[in-house]
Amino acid sequence: MGPLMISSFNFIWCVLLLVLCAVRIHVEANGWLNAHATFYGANQSPTSLGGACGYDDTFHAGFGVNTAAVSTMLFKEGEVCGACYQVICDYKIDPKWCLRSRSVTVTATNFCPPNNHGGWCDPPHHHFDMSMPAFFRIARQGNEGIVPVLYRRVACKRRGGVRFTLKGQSNFNMVMITNVGGSGDVKGVWIRGSRSGAWLPLHRNWGANWQSSADLRNQRLSFKVTLVDGKTLVFLNVVSSNWRFGQTFSSHNQFF
Image (cartoon, rainbow, N blue to C red; front, side, top):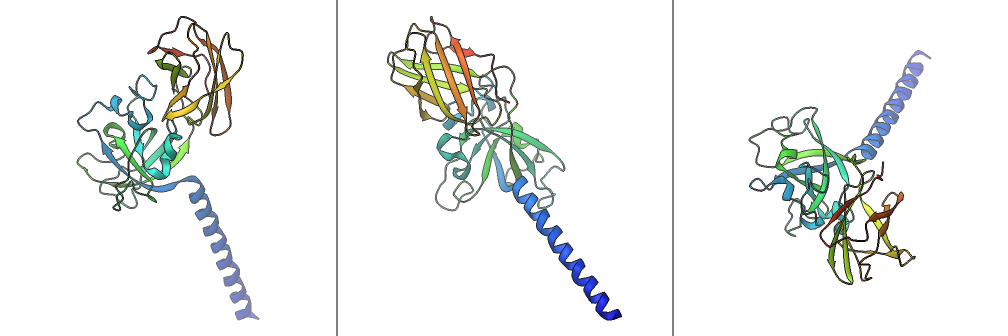
């Protein structure tokens, strides 16, 4: 009976180890994802890296300098613009260039285009081409190459309310929506003039810019915004009736 009991104990112990390993793998898979990171814009002001999302100035948009261009797998044709990611350099894989236990939260403000020749921004790679200030918060100075990273989506924490910048002319209205908290990525937008009464859907023109063909000049404007996670806020009369193209209006409402 002795040898049989020991064998049974070893079998049970092995099963427990397998279960624990499976749980650990599951948690890691659902918490952090593998990717790589580089940096760009070394000779540019980091506030100018709004690129494919259409942000004219990342400070004006409420994002600061910790921004990134993301690869095709993450960009989703601009839907991800404004989303936030916590990124850490994978010290276990690259202890030479990764800073231990450092993380940075970046906002997706640009697109890292594929070159279709196996580049890091080609599908199926997940890649962050970060602003230089953000990159060197997790990697050592002197590294001009690429580092392995782990990342996960996190809630965006913004100061103040959601902002609406009016662009376009006459019956072509384009609205850039910035400083969005919560999930950060906008799924749908509606606009209503003080004389129109009905909510009119806007359509994504590119990145964070949404358009409508309605002529809403000389009216107070309200917006309804829905994020990808389903949360919706209404911004009543956030724009005064004497608005002009090029102006930005800040609301008092924010997603959390």
